Length: 273
Length: 89
Image (cartoon, rainbow over all chains, first blue to last red; front, top):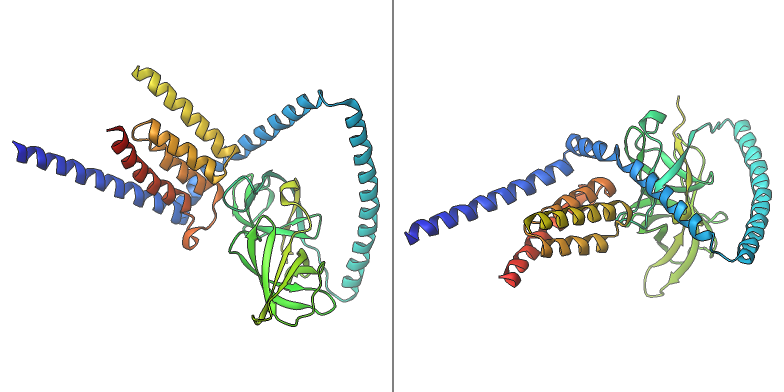
C-alpha cells in the first residue's frame, strides 16, 4: 500500500516536472520563433497603444485638476517665463531653418540631394518606465514605417531605430540601450572615429586612443551611409577621463535633450529610389 | 470564503496589469509578483507577467532572443513557490 502511494506520488511529481518543462519550452519558443513572437506582439499591440494614450489623458486631466489649487501668482510667473522661452526658441528656429535651407542648397549644388521621407509621430510610451530602453510611437505599417527607419528629434538629434512595427504603432530601440554599439565621429576640427556603447537613457561611453584632441562640448555624430547622406547628432561630450596607465581615453557623452521629455519625433526613412 | 479569495485574486491581477502598463519598472513588477506568489497558491499569473513584459518592452535580450523577463519570472516563481510551501507548511 505504501509502495503504491509512493509510486503515485512519484508519478504526480514527474507529471508536474513534465508540465513545467513543457510550459517553459512553449514560452521560450513563443518569444524566440519570429512568427510566433510577431503574432503575440501584434495581438498585445492592438490594445497597448490605446491603454497608454488613455493613461496619458488621465494624467493630463489629473494635472489640470490640481493646477486649480496652484497659487495664481506662481502660475502667472510660470506663464511669463514660458512665453519668454517660446519667443527665444522661435528666434532660434528661424535661424536654424535659414541654416538648413543654405545647407540643402549647398548639397544640391554638390549633387547630393537629401530628400529623405520624414513622418512626424507622437511618443506614446517613453523609456525610464521600463527595464529596457525602448519607446513606442503612434505610427506604424499603415503610415509606411518600416523596421530600420531612424527616429530623430528636432530634425537632427538621433534617438534610435525602429525595431518592431505593428499596424498603427512601432517599437523603437534607443541607440543608448545598454550594450548597443554604434560607430561615431567625435569633434569637427579634428574628428575622431570610435565605437559608442550605450549606457541607458541617452548616455554613452566611447574609448578612443590616448592623445586624441577632444574637448568638452564636442559634438558626436553618427556617420550615415550613402542612403541617408546627412549626419545626425547623437550627443555632446560631457566628460573625458584620462588615465595615463591605460592606452585609451574614456569619453562619456549624452544626448543634448532629456529623452523623457520627448513627445514628438520624426521617422526618417531612407530616400526611396 | 473561496469566492472572496477568487475575488481578491482577480483584483490583484488587475493591479498587476495596471502596473505592467503604467509602472513597468522591474523592481515594482517583481515585488508585486512575489507578493502574489506568497498570497495565492499556484500564482502562474507571475509567469504570464514575465512573458508580457518581454512581448511589450523587449526587442532582444539574452543572446538577442528577448526572453529575459519570462525566464526570470519562471525561475523566481518556482523558487519562491517552494519557499512559500515551506514557510506556510
